[in-house]
Length: 159
Image 1 (spheres, rainbow, N blue to C red):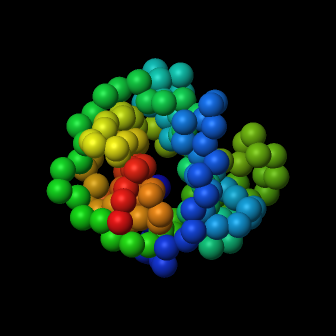
Image 2 (cartoon, one colour; image 1 turned 120 degrees about the vertical axis):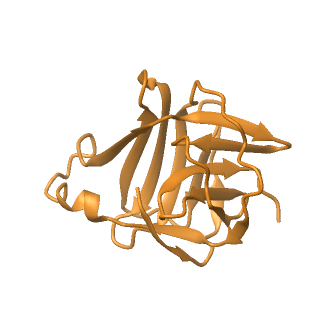
Image 3 (cartoon, rainbow, N blue to C red; image 1 turned 135 degrees about the vertical axis):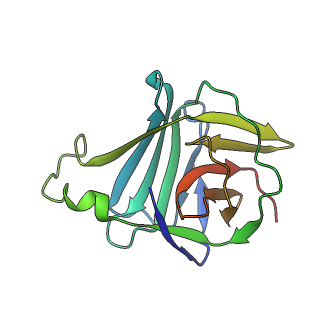
């Protein structure tokens, strides 16, 4: 998943509960397209996270941890934090435009998923690569690589 730009921060609402350790919505409820991140070895049973994007703008709209990644990683050190949110490239959904069934109109991405913690922060990695920066809206930051790739997200960020 490629991040095309950093946009102004969007208000976030934590909707986590006893069944979903992370469920954060950014902005109002909008029509979304989804990217499903899952563990490349072991499939979704070893890690499954949904990231929703506004279907028209590509703005980050939601992140939900469905199944916590089984792998333990190393929390990224010395990653700068910038205020804002992300806008993703929607080209991968263009070929799915005629599919209205939400069970089949999503993009799936597999990677070396892991979870790591530092202080009160938790980083959910979609890849083994280290983010170049965290783009923060509220207490959640998206890990973005040097080439704009979405590498994960962190919760518990404080201003």
